[in-house]
Amino acid sequence: MSKLRLSLGCWDYDRTRALMDGTVVPDGIDLNYLNMPVEETFFRMLRHREFDVAEMSLSSYTVSLFKPERPFIAIPIFPSRFFRHSCIYVNADAGIREPKDLIGKRIGTPEYQMTAPVWIRGILDEHYGVPVDSVTYVTGGEEEPGRPEKLKIDLPPNIKVEQIGPTQTLSQMLLDGEIDALHTARMPSTFLTGKGKVTRLFPDFEAVEREYFRSTGIFPIMHTLVIRREIYEANRWVAQSLYKAFVQAQQVAYQNLRETAALKIMHPWLLGNMEAVVKEMGEDFWAYGFENNRKTLETFLRYHHQGGLSKKLLTPEDLFAPETFEAFKI
Image (cartoon, rainbow, N blue to C red):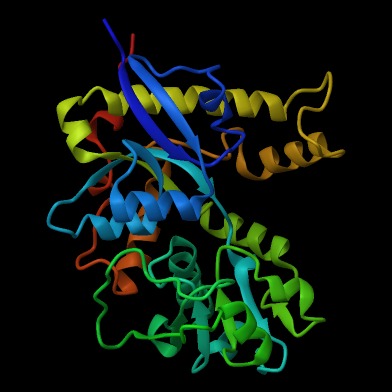
């Protein structure tokens, strides 16, 4: 019997490379792995649904669940996770010395519905007393003009969002003081070229992020994996088949990080860093699966709703194919 041929849009991660090179093959599936940066994958999947399966912004996917057609369904695979305290940049002359100084400021964000800013806004609100609706958000291209929201969003009136001009970029506006701060996923080029005029809100971000994890137990989820709903409905088995394969590929990456005969990762002190991460976060520090990510997902969904992106507060069960909630036992 021939296998179901599916296209996958996903970046080149260590945790997915075994799927890309064919070391791991999903049961019953002939997978065509298309390696693209995340912005391209998200744009093409959200605008044109070009792939059968794709890595997807967790926020964009959640927004899509409120569309009449609900075009995708996710499985609890999380190819991207990231502590985002390091991703709050400020203009050095804006008088921002602590998080509460952000109140009343103009803050850039490439897209309001991006996952990274959802986490940043929620963390600033919950942990630093910066209400989501206490600033003005300015959206547009970070390094190139003309970036739109990939999905149409309908925000409540207390959330203030403005679009930048057709020739402007957020990176340059931050350097020039036209915006006071920037919430982003990618480091702005002017952080490197701005001669100290663009700085981080949290210079010692690693210590701040470690303390955040110790106090919350949360390693923020950025991306999930989605299947076009019509493919899932016609082949319900693909959710579990893909889930198992991504877990197997992740196990290959875990083993490569722990290899001692020769370093597979180009990092001289990898082993010491790995031991420190495991001591801090546990053996399965990049956890896939539903139940062991419940608190992180509940927190994200609360932030998503609080920021006006969800019309109602969803539960983690609302996000994923039910076939992936549990597995058989012998």
